[in-house]
Length: 118
Length: 118
Image (cartoon, rainbow over all chains, first blue to last red; front, side, top):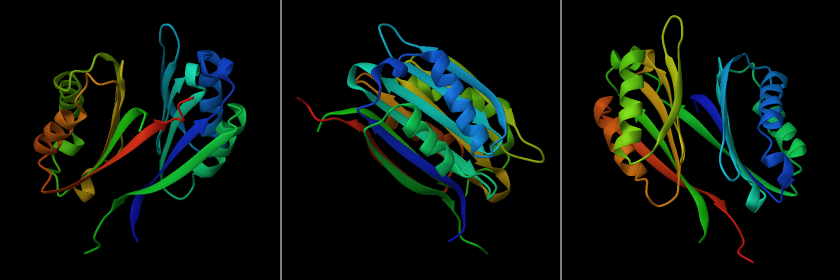
């Protein structure tokens, strides 16, 4: 199977609700997770919602990491999309599960860009 | 089923290779797709890769749209993640399939944030 990218979809439940609403913390954790996975960070963009919730993306040379949080539900949706063999998205996933204090989580991996080889 | 968000994953194949490498075009199309779906655009970030390929995100109040292109393969990966009932992600998907000239495509929908109701 010849896939261009790996896409991990994390469902993080029963998280630490306080950190889910902390933009600075989430920005630092997502950026560190990208670096620890071996990715090259190109930029980021984060937004704080009122009354609660944060959305943020870290764009990496190898694709992106995204987070959306619902502190009132203790829930965060995280995407880790990478291409190439040098990045280890599992490392980023494990860091995020740990740092957000998720008591329950699932990780779904989807192969992106499965192309017919000529 | 009580889901916080809808996540459409588009695999766009056999696209117009020229537009897949056109950052300005892709930025305009992704932003217009968000607006036509009824979303509120908060910001965007796009990167051109050398020798080819574009990555870009449009952050909306209702989550995000993302695109990664591989012009050399005629392929684009697109994510449309929305929450709430007022946004119609299918509208954005149809526009992107059309504007990128995808001769083959698949759309996978994943419900995000399916939480136990107390």
